[in-house]
Length: 182
Image 1 (spheres, rainbow, N blue to C red):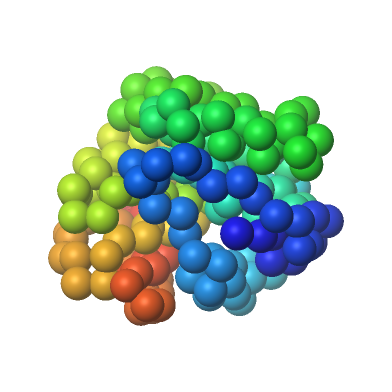
Image 2 (cartoon, rainbow, N blue to C red):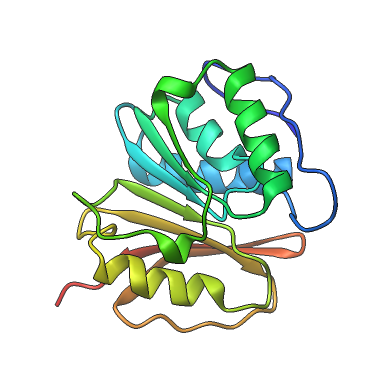
């Protein structure tokens, strides 16, 4: 695993030990960020979240491309060790907030984030549950962009969201969502 673009381009990332975490493949991450760049333009100054973070590859990619700050939420101890090691290796600590807990343990937000990236375990429905809660707690606002990675054949329905784009890459399905205007 490596950073694809930006300040830390080509820097290697450590993957968590064991098989509890499924890191997003470089090709899948490259496709996701290409989809985001076509919508956002760039990442300069954005406040982002990498939820179900694993190694932190998604959030660190956003930071490498200019995001101002990233909140990482992960509960697996091996993944947290890899995440903290990756942040330290890139000297990114001042721009990172690591929450060693479930995404579902996040409380109310002070303000909505610009971009939330969710890569929950495939086939669990955890992404749907988390998105509903995050929207109700103010993490997602009308200007927020949301990405959800699921298994290619995994079906989901999200009340209060519209699908902006969807792409299949290998075994993964990448979905970009916006909050539905009421």
